[in-house]
Amino acid sequence: MTDTTFTILLGGALTPTERLRAAVAGSRAIAADGGMRHAAALGLSPELWVGDFDSSADLPVEDFPGVPRMPYPAQKASTDGEIAVEQALSRGATRLVLAGALGGERSDHAVMHLLSGVALAKAGIDVMMSSGTEEAFPLLRAELTLDLPKGSLFSILGFSPLAGLTIGNARYPLTDFALAFGSSRTISNVAEGPVSFSLKSGDAVILARPYDLSGA
Image (cartoon, rainbow, N blue to C red):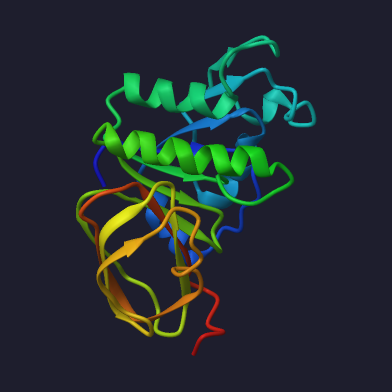
């Protein structure tokens, strides 16, 4: 892994699965407020800790010696996660793993992370979002293959109308399909092994559950 891969430790729910630990191994890390509590479980030593620290008041600073803190006021125009991403980009990040980006108590934050992932991908950044048990990847006008276990579940969420959507090696394949905005047609598909995706136009996110083999 290169030194331009950064893991952004966010405050959402996180299970330190084997897949997630492999995805972040050797990466640089920046913690966003309460996301610092995920660092040890993922074997990471953040080089920066940012935020207003309202969700990490229970974390003693002395437990993280040598990690610089960058405090922000609670009344700010960006989330702690967005600030952490901006810091990673300023340090040369070309690939981001947003750990703790999905699930948890704040669905507004989870949806915002998905939207942010799409925006970052449009800017040329390679993005993965994960809770450990779920993984999300932006799907834009390109080809993408995900190494998913046979029988695992995945869905495609369209953030706009989609044209030319192709899904290969899945229980419900599609070829050059047009998906209307808001359609549930691409929810709950099943991987037959590594799944290929391509899209001619539109913005979407692939949401995969590699440990959920209920489709087997």
